[in-house]
Length: 155
Image (cartoon, rainbow, N blue to C red; front, top):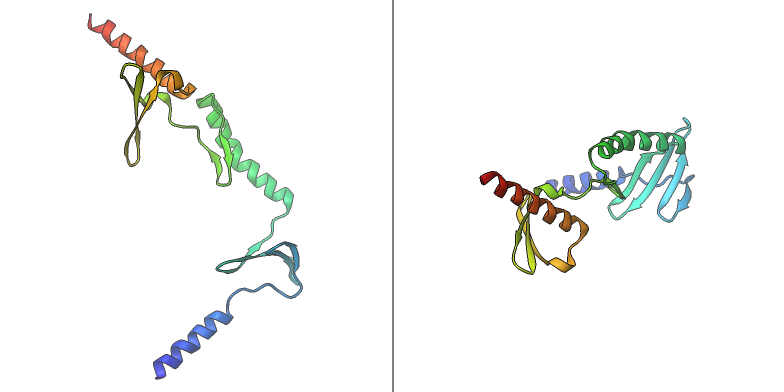
């Protein structure tokens, strides 16, 4: 009986220690509140299904400067290495797809069989020669050049 009371008291104590939206907070958008405390720090409170999340608010200029610092070196490296651009996503910059060099192509008459390595094993797909994407066409051209070079070196 004592254990049950102790566990219940601890649960109530933990529940009361959860973060909540302060009374003086202003609602910026539904579920997002902004609050400046007595020391002058500004916080954002976001309501989530798991409770309220408190985070320190960054001024817009500082956030933009940090974002440009993160993307500038990555963009410089990618533009020098490959001609393809990165794509923005909610998770940051997305790298271009695997290079055509890593793809093996086998000619099956009117269709082609592609194979590329992936973290979960090799990934295979078939495409008709008339329906190729530019990426697949590049892989096929590279495969033909390699097979011509290999057959020329054997003679």
